[in-house]
Image 1 (cartoon, rainbow, N blue to C red):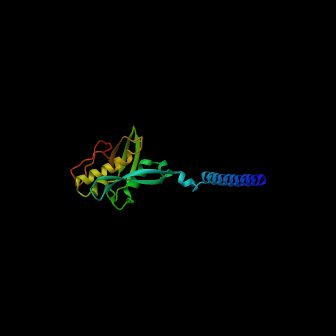
Image 2: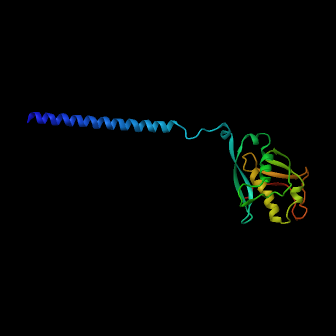
Image 3: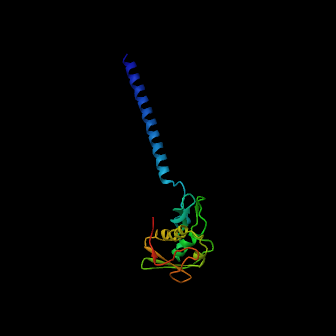
Length: 186
């Protein structure tokens, strides 16, 4: 009877050792998997992706004639030389979203753009005023799509629009005059 008890105790000890070893191996395997997933990146970030930044361009909604921002990811290198000119040129291009329209009349060119005391002085070609549709609200959307886009930049507080270097130009077919500086309108 004593031999039977000793045999049962030995069998129990062996079973406990086997269970202990199996638990240890399972924990070790799980920790190795956790370490592996923590260290291994899902996707390498390219140098090009590191240079990307998000900008907001304000376009007209096709639904209700309001300005809607469209987020774009662009290379920071594009903004180095003259960010104000670059942003307006991007704004002139067709938006990516099909429910948005460019507010800037076709044919408009950016002659120059510079920052002075927090105000961007933006010189546009005559097409900006000559190619308007005749609707005063659409002309205002053209102005404020530019203003809202440029004032997204921290250093820009207002925008002054010139036409071929001249101030106080009147839209050719609308009773609206470009004068003074424009601040963001939400």
